[in-house]
Image (cartoon, rainbow, N blue to C red; front, side, top):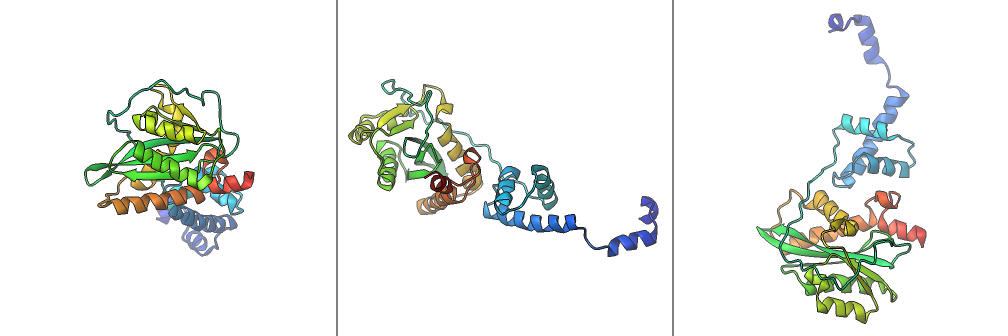
Length: 266
């Protein structure tokens, strides 16, 4: 080996006995911290969030160095392509305007957003409705059911109301699905003084915050797992919402968790 590499035997043995440099020792310590952060995220954090987490621990480190150490340690965030199924249940009603066309939340409990997605359980669909505060990205309420309709979406919304007790003139934004555009759901919102808002037809990006949450949920914990009971799926969602609200770093709010962000801006 020494002959092939063009070095002397004495030089090779001297290199072997040499102590690690200060930089190498620091890399070793950082890698250990990164492993803890990576495992704590369930293998979902990439270099941007790991860099922010390290900086939150007091480390001064560049993105390039984080990427290099992640490659050396074999750390690679899990990524899943999430496809949204079309159950042919959407009715595109026009009676509710898109109030978010030129408006973004500037405080908590000003704008809530909601949506429904599909999760597989033993070859069948389960329906998950979620309500989120657009300002802080905090999940306020959710409901899981075997059927999709206003009962599902009202359960998630009512849980959010009990949790936050919002003042009147709150805006609730969703897509134009029948479970939101139906009479029962609209009546509940009007009774609370909530203004209803809906996306434009064929424009799912108008509700991007919910789309982003569902993608994170599926990519972080749902993708690749097989659930055998409703209680197992429900427990998984409950744990993830707790993690999402209290620990997951969100780039859109300065790499803070929603709960931390609300506490700092209060």
